[in-house]
Image (cartoon, rainbow, N blue to C red; front, side, top):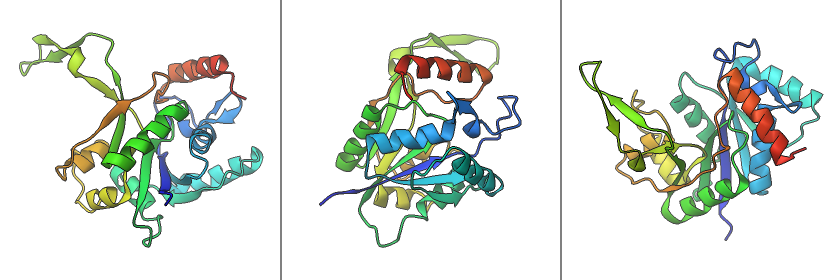
Length: 232
């Protein structure tokens, strides 16, 4: 039996660090809004994935206008964002029909348009086997830890550190149980929510280009990645 696949793409940014009036998920890369490229990447990797886009209610009309303008017809469901990422993901989860018991769900940052199809497939395959999959990359720069006095510091062994990416991918039943918990400030990503249940997290290899677009410099990097990847 084919396992149902869902992708919850969370896009609630206001673009403040971009210094732009337009939220960063709607800014163009190579003439196409970031968010459209992100959704297309999932459909490329998993043709049978059901896409759920989580947007603040105040941005949904603008998104619909963009879809018309760019002739963007990729099927997807729109859910309303909440006060925090935790609540936004919860709203996305609630769009999945209650009679769907077995599925794999990836939660992805809408402003990570360059996750590779291989990473997406790897995450879903691993989560189908173990219940969890989080893509990570090794830390390549030296890292120092500031001590309690606020001035002294010490080098950390970077070989034991990893940079976390998305899609963070889980079995639907596990993710639903995790999001029944009350919200805590310590829930910084989906893996931390699942970990709070006492469930171990499986790490898989990510891809270096899977950057989160946050600043104007990131947009310049994105244009370069797009050029070298020769995407349409």
